[in-house]
Image (cartoon, rainbow, N blue to C red):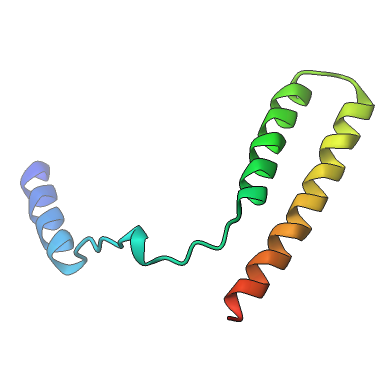
Length: 82
């Protein structure tokens, strides 16, 4: 009995809220090659400092993340205004 209720409910729910697919080609690509390289370097720094207890390495990673965040915000804000 519960399975028939569930099937009916899911059928009505899926009919009421259809899935909308968004094309990624329409999206404006604001990332630059520099930002992409920075992100890959940040990932490698994270992997390096994840299991290390070196405070200098962790401080470098945190500082790199802050700089990367500021640059990404600045680039995304300038390209959105265009």
